[in-house]
Length: 622
Image 1 (tube, helix red, strand yellow):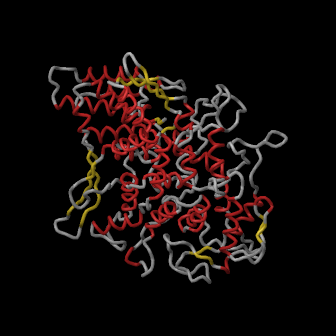
Image 2 (tube, rainbow, N blue to C red):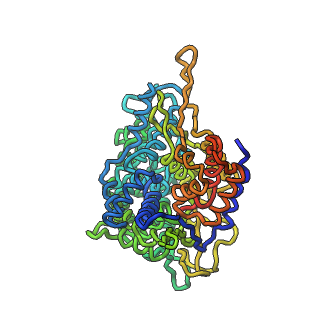
Image 3 (tube, rainbow, N blue to C red):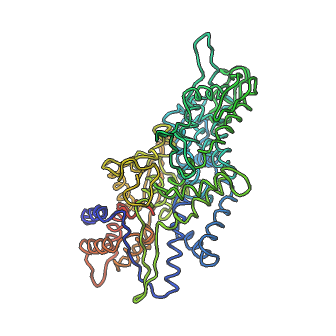
């Protein structure tokens, strides 16, 4: 393979071209009909890249056709309806199905069996038909975080599991499935499921949390009481409906709760035990990381409790009823709408939604039109169909000659796509799973295909992989004392970039190495396990192919190749300068000849794709 360093360095130069000022690129077209179709395809791709783990050609074509028939917003609204009508593709059955197909079960003694939950996550995220639900569950598990790094969920000695005891490592998939199963309801339903699931009980020590004993000087554990408010519902400070901070008479932020309130709520979240407990002793029963926790009344604090906004839970209330009432109390707080709306917008659309955008979504969150708060489908429509979401890319029809101009909007309209989503998107567009047994048709991706500071189920803490208000060093804030929500007025905004908290020199290099390896090798191969039960031992691997057949078929024409990659990988946001420089660099590496060989076409595709996939036009999404 020829030296591609020049081409890769060109990708890095693109960062100097990338600023908050919109810069346009153009696509030549042969007719006004082609111009209209291209515009719809770019809009369909823009929408699907947010609502799924990555747009595919088939999905783009179908949605673009629908847009041309009924209009852009109606087509996307109908698509959301269709997605919510689908049954969720669950991770538990996928995991155990893969195991069974490979000749294992939950008591198999072979090492590394827990890898199947990671295979199931990648398989469903890449291939499941209910893409919107899978994408939303990924957003929610970064708000209501559980992590295998914080939970001892190894299978220990599988053969010692009792008859009714599920394998511990199935718990993570069970938690994910709980989120998926509640998406047709409200965010209140999500909070209830999160509160009752043993994975959260283990993560934040609400499992086997007992009432305090003054004589012994013990108190109820406060972890879950604190984090359900701080991270999962209302945040630290009082908010206006547009997400900006309310201020007291001294101009200071107003706390939503204090330590006394945490202590009161902690008393509510007492009494939960594993589902295999006997209901009378909180220390009874085998560990069950999968099924909903049960209440042990003798361990629940039955005293009266003072909650948010002066509400009270009376003494001697039933434990389950008391916890449900506590969740109702938190959910009724006016912060829930703007706090969760902003987090979901950040996960799906842009890092810096305007106050107006947050306010519009909050209005729908607070009332879906028929009095329901937190209706997940209504909230998804409000987020994905908002005018601000569409305006991150501007398309203009031009003539003489006919062409479509595409311009990305300012910095506040974009987000860095997290590595896990970016890689799933690459797999959805280009990947073909192995066709050979025992892994044919299955996306057996490892837990961490790259050193990216991110892997499903492996958040480093309850605070997720990155913070919603993260700002890289270097003075991104443009004005002292500006509000927490950015505005478009120059000089009066703070800009946040959560996913950039992941980016280090190691991560950047690892991403480049992963893309280079996949593109050059036209696939990724992963060792799975060695069967020591046969002689000689047999080792099994999985392979996912990335054929790049179409790209190689058009690589005779470098301009056509670059335009294609701009369209399918960058949604048309490459600048003309970048496209010109990329074309020149490719031709410098593989010069044009009367007959370009198959080897030369492969080299062109390799250099072009590695450059593009390491450029901001691919990594930053508008």
